[in-house]
Image (cartoon, rainbow, N blue to C red; front, top):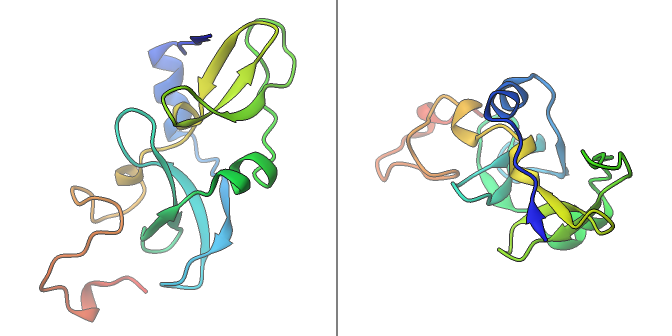
Length: 135
């Protein structure tokens, strides 16, 4: 199976487009909805608090059964199926066309959405006082 490589300009535009995908949970930190974001190079995806950016893991069962995105195959236009890819990241697979698209290619990067970019998702400085936390 081969990865379908999105045009870099299309990927860049898509990642900054203001549509967000809900993570199907409420954050523990701020009791706000979570959003799906690309957390690391390579395609790792997390659910991050929509208010402060604190992250939690996106469970496989939630990705496969609750996110419910219709991703159309760029070759046959059929609906691609959510799967765990060979590299262990989440993505969408078209079995007849033998291609996949990484979920992370469709999501914004976490540092593009929260003002404390430069730290890993969910990281806090050791001397963080409560006035720094946006919640």
